Image 1: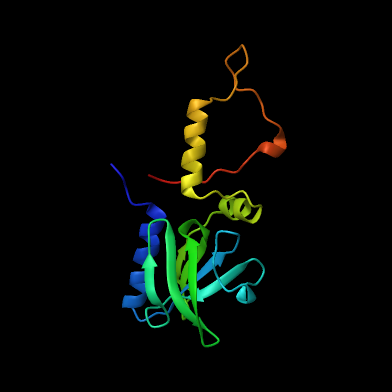
Image 2: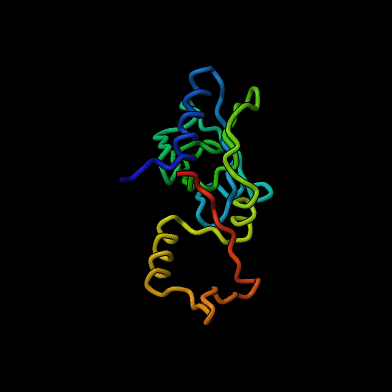
Length: 156
């Protein structure tokens, strides 16, 4: 049985709540190689975007990706980013909203350690086929400290 990712569901619910109550939904996105936004508008590694129905075209708040078209300086641009890159979704008017990203996730993305969900699934499949070597005592062999990758915690 497949379930809708909680973060995607909460983002859609927050967007709906903001829109229904007359607020302008803004999203802050952490930018890396997986994020397609106009680079000239990125500040300090993130971008804030108006994702109201009036300001976007073809807005899709999907389970893995958010995408839409928007005008920047009169030019239509296609915007696309992983749901996992949303720092927060909030009201322009009141700043109320949903803080989507944890500190560990923020650091992992900023350090270039983020993997798309498909890549993670492939890597986990490889681990099942090639398990981590163990010592004779049955304990996992320690890896070098630099090989440590922060993990993303998801509630299912």
